[in-house]
Image (cartoon, rainbow, N blue to C red; front, side, top):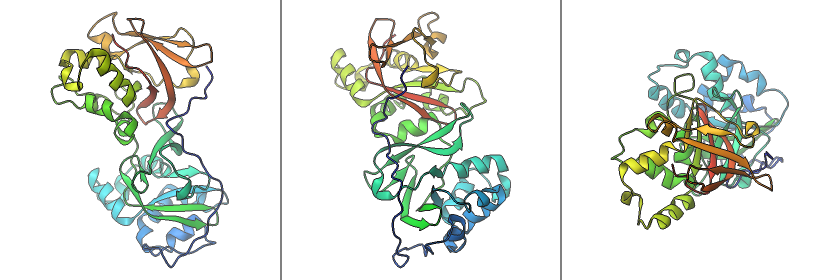
Length: 329
């Protein structure tokens, strides 16, 4: 399959350096010409970040020549992160875990804030589910927010080997739920997954970390228009008009457990056994095919077809491919 689908829309990485006026930085950032690590070392509010870089050895990486974009959490951001994981200091975090969390704040290439648009980029963090780079979602509707949790407070601080954006929260390793919640294209899907009367906790299921069954997950995620078209098709006003057993079955039919199926490994005629099969043995299969123009198509048990319109949103515990039609068991 041609791996050319675009996520809605993709982040464009602009590879050029902008100027920096260190008189207008509320965080007291200094100074142009310094490496990223030197710059952080000279900034009081980034001292915990510097300690974390030194503990993991990433200080050498981000001091070397190159072109990096670093999302730099403040001391307060690290304090909040440590509290959230019941840790008292950086020493409580295994070095390999801390390293991957820090790499989730590093993008290759120098990206200024004015070049950011709503969409996905890849960080240098490695997914436990795929051993490939993880995705990060950027929302620019109101400022710049990463993965729905971390906002840029000081942007476009130039270093000799890249650019730094100071952020107000540590960006933890994402689950597939992280991207569903952060990306407004999946807003109706999140409403469905979190409906209070569901007998299964889909959020709990899809938050299970890689390495713990039934993770990892491959999720074929319908975008908002897919659900809107389904409601029209069913003559329903909203999701509440769909009974719980039907909605649960439909949601289960979009989840493949125990697999992180990247787009490059999809092949024509591949049949997926979805999590619905656990409740309806033999009734939870869905077929992937390649269309005449190289597009990916899913066909459900009713012969309905859905186009795969975006691929490879990689989380730590699985992967999302966006589709334009809700498939039905």
